[in-house]
Image (cartoon, rainbow, N blue to C red):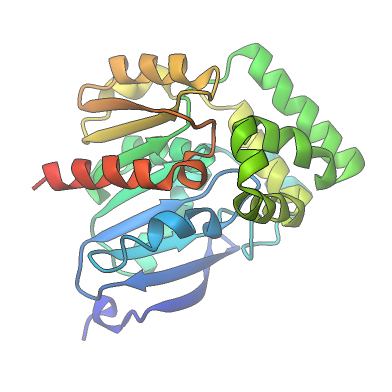
Length: 277
């Protein structure tokens, strides 16, 4: 019996490159695999609303990025040295562990940039990419913003990031009218280990995929919230650079689109996956 046949739905802790990654497997056994990757300062629960509508037709692998959720811990040196090449390698290690030959990969923010890394480094393992609220490079002012956030977390912990992050991630109307969706995200931010945040932020500061995007031949869906400034402009540039990418704007959404507009994400995702045959 192959390892794939032995994989059961449930939670796993998987060692990849010396780091323990928390994984949730769910969905219909034997179905096509979808792999979902979270943003900085969240965990795999960021996908709950989307995943609940996919498990009857797909097999889902969700995981907490290194240093996030129940993954980790990681030390100071590992955090500072983290790159997207390493984050993409984490994904490939998970695919190998569960004997997944090919998957559709879906990522939001940090997870979306990880998707680009997987698409560049291991296109044979990916049937499609869905990139939500991500960019492919970090101009100097954005690099400095991440350096400032790292310094704040080192000095004052994750509480220093909660209110400013929620203001960037959600529209004001959503924060006011949907506290039942916003409060769990605030809890995820607070629960993220400082080194987990620093690891992701260090990778973000070094991000430079834009010059190589033309090499990604994999069918790619790009989604961005209309109120997620300046991401719409950045993602338009990505769509122009990628030969097989399609871009859709999600109205009434800021950065964390899978939480603010899960039905819109599902509609675009299902139409995209259905078009692949």
